[in-house]
Structures are given as C-alpha cells and as structure tokens.
Image 1: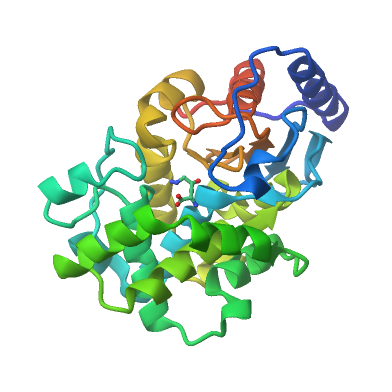
Image 2: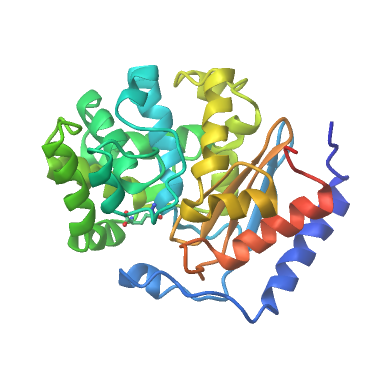
Length: 313
Ligand code: DON
C-alpha cells in the first residue's frame, strides 16, 4: 500500500512541480475553436490532490475555475449508469477508439454505436439518456448538480458564454447525433440532447474542486456522496478502467504508459487522475498537444506520480 508523504513534504513537491512548469518552453497551444478557450493564458498552471480522508493539497492556479469540457463525461456517465445500469452498454461500447474524439468515420463503420462513452458520440448517447430521464430546467443541469454535490460546493457554475460558443460551433457534434438518430441510437430531440452535452462541457471548476468531485473514484465506490448516485465499488472500478483505456482520446495508451493511472482530460486543459485507494488528482494548464491533452497538466501528473511511486502497476 502506498503512503503519501507528510503534508509539509507533499506541499514542497507540489510547489516544486508547479515552479518547474513555469520554465517549460514546450507549452502546447490552447484550443482555438472558441474564443473563451483560445484567450486563456498559456502561463496558467495548477495542481490539486484530494487524499482519501485528508484535506486537499494544491499549488499554482489550483483555485482558478476553467472549462472542464470532456472531464464532464465522467460525471454524465455516472448519471446515465445510475439511470439505466448495464443496459447502457447495448448503445455504447467499451473499447478505445484510436481515432480523434469527434471522428465521424468510425461511427459510420460501426453503425452508430460509439466505441466508448468518452468520445463525443458516446457522450452524446449518454446525454440522450440523461435528457430522457431528467426533467430539470436548463439552469439546473443534472451534471452541474452532480459536480456541486460531489465537491460539496454550490459555487460551481456553467459559463454561459462558453455554452453559447459551443452551440454556435457545434455542427460536427450535431452531425454525430443526427447520424446516430438515423441509426436508431438517439431517442430525444437532437438539439435538446446536444445542448445538454454542450452545457455539461461548459461547466467551470478549479483543480481543487475537480479533485474533490472525483475523489469517489479513488474511494473505490465506498463514498457516501457517490453511492447516492448508484456508484457501487464495481461501478467505480469500471469507470476507472474506462478512464485508463479511453480517457485521453487517441493518446490513452500513451498516457497509460507515462502515468499508469486512470485519467480523463478535456480540451480546456484539465486532466484528472485517480490513484485507487489513495487520492484523486487534478492538474490544469491550457496548452494542448496535437491529440487535445494538456502538455503541462500531463507532465505535472507524470512528475508527481513518478516522485511518489503512484501507479496501479
Ligand atoms: O465536444 C466538443 O467538441 C468540445 N466541447 C470538446 C470537448 C472535449 O474536451 C474533447 N472531447 N472529447
């Protein structure tokens, strides 16, 4: 069993990692498809760790909210599994895609059944299930509600400007949804489903809030807050497995090789990593590599887990 270092030493390690990131010259490029993401400074960098049973430790811009984007797919998956359980897997697969997260080609070959819930079409089917099952008003989006509940922080919000930009630039996601509608894998109105998906992508959270909201996955499902949403130990293990194999788009294998932990990234520059039985981590820096994963957030998580010997292997 790994033991975290004492809090003072832990803080020194986090500060050292963030300091080193300041001097990195290879910082990637911010997502450019909407101005709200393109305009965030590449100098931003934060990290937070939420150990089981201990207070959050953090460094750098760890309290600054950023666009969680695809990291929201963890939370929407929790809700959809809570609604329909294993029946979800009749509509969405569990294999890594090896293709970009918004690829249309693969979906056509596979007759409208997305490879996994962490690529866009998979997340859109998940949104379809949530849309069908929930009656909440738009300002009380169920994924937002879940993030607030898990982090025990009701200041977490949807950035309406990001949402409007996602809607304005969302033709490719609507195309994926219409294709799946044609194949019988979408039940609700496509506009409603994609807007629900865009809204969850537009949630903003800090590293500290994200680490807290995902700690239930490190707790292996033995978490009171998450069990209210149907997260059993078995379900937590399976979500972690999917994060390990599919959580970082078509770089999931590379991330597993470098970090050896279940991870989920988003094009806002955030990455969440789970150390089962120990802690959840969140790191953020907006510059992305060509696959859409944050260059410095990944490096920071890699560095931290290497120093602490944290890996599931
Ligand atoms: O769906 C989109 O195109 C954006 N909201 C990007 C979300 C993201 O982080 C990458 N998608 N898997």
